[in-house]
Length: 329
Image (cartoon, rainbow, N blue to C red; front, side):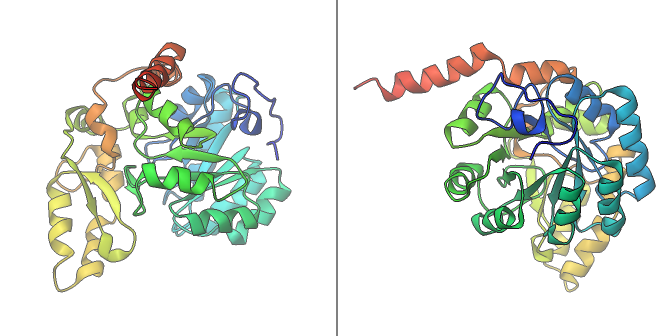
């Protein structure tokens, strides 16, 4: 199904472009409190699919963001619905009422809402972290799935992108969008080599000029080293990848304490909002993917999009692999 009002883009045939109506087969990751109307509009206008993240925000905030985005651009966009949100039922109804072109779901099973969304003409794309879930989403009527490896920031699964992407691509008959660890054109090329029909990029867009995240958040991404990425909250059943921080160390200790999951949930409550909106160094949770260690500067969103799909860079990446593999042929 193609979302209402979308025109097919034929520059990248065989990708998700003709499904979501974008110039590039690119989705901007839905990062709670980070992915607002400002960032999403900038990415959509640059040729990708900008995404507003509902996260745990109230319905009023989400509706306002959708309206703000539509004031900025008439390009296609998406809304990321976090199914663990206390407002999920109201957000799901907003998707229907506002005729959101593309709805992306995470942290749960969207079965209760898919039929109604499809009635509204929405393209439905769940984020999945396993083959079984991807196959279930296909049977449920998803238009495509986003296979997110554990290199991603925020809530993650167990499998790496290198294993997850090709496994899901060969297990379903709907398009697969690769996510988790993609930073540059070489990563885009690798994703397509492993069976993807598009890519989702989150962490790098934290450093977009149009991103309204606190300056401290952006600075931490720029300063991040390869060993600064940590996973917290495994004991809760919903592990989260963050950058090293005082709160992260406290969370790590709480996992082995007498209160376990209860203590972790309490410590983590509101921590992402404190990081994104206030740059709270002590009590903030700075969720980013492992590729933060390669993100070193703030750029316009359009420049990030162009670099990700730079034809020369993609050709170089593919050509280098071909040269190495065919050396003794």
